[in-house]
Amino acid sequence: MNVSRVGPRANDRTQVCRPSTRAHMQTIGFIGLGAMGTPMAWNLEEAGHDLLVYNRSDGPTEPFADAGIDVADSPRAVGQQADVVVIMVTDDEALAAVLDGEDGLLIGLDSETTVIQMSTVTPEATEAAAQTVQAQNARFVDAPVSGTVGPAEEGTLTVLAGGDDDVIDDVEAILAAMGEPIVRCGDVGDGARMKLFVNLLLGDMMSAYAEALTFGAAQGLDLEAMQQVVEAGAVDSPLFRIKGDLIAERDFQPRFPVDLQFKDLRYANEVANDVGVQLPQTAAARESFSAASAMGHGNEDMTAVLKYLESIADVTVER
Image (cartoon, rainbow, N blue to C red):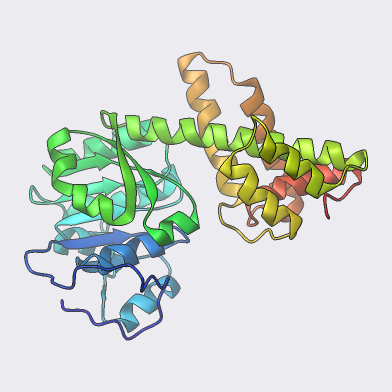
């Protein structure tokens, strides 16, 4: 395809050296150009892969088209033209919509195609997708990612890979263009399970942190002093450092939106019910994120769960 970049960039990482040759590179089809998918797709292009993109709405594809990158008109067309297809969509329903139907990805697959499912979906949806893909004699890798928009732009997402080791070996360079480390989690479905594990912990931590800040602010404690105490002790974490700085600035621009965190906690609770595990803290965190969404903060960063707690306490966490 020999793409020269003439259009706008989703991110600019000129300090990172990327191979310029495209010899022997496979064509990668990328489905789902949201806040995460867009920089992931650019990283594949920067790594030298021939790229073909598809998104349900046209807007996100325009920078790729402007750069001379092919835009498919359906998931089916992606399957017909790509050697490897990456899927990065919102939820179980979106994954099913990509796969099924007369213009769905499944129709375009054959034994030469590998599908890498990188969306955050349930293990059940992942395993069902694998079965339908493999029924077309195509190969399947379960590889959701841990991280937000910043790591997606930097190519430092943690890849949670599940599936046949031989298949993962074959696509490892593709995965490495989007993230590191690549953690091998087990069979197909185990990547999805690991993703819910880490996002369960993320949601619980964010909810607890927001509660603690609200508790302190309601008593007149200084935000900077609270943050200093957190960072000096055993509870220090990158999450609290990063989100603390954003909260101090009242910056709720979406890095990982409330609605997506709520969705992941809902999935985690559903899986927990299936396997007979009680998640009382996660259930409470889910309700806090649900309430924040109901207040109109669903498209704001997950830190906006704080706004729900502030509204109850009639206090603002600020400098």
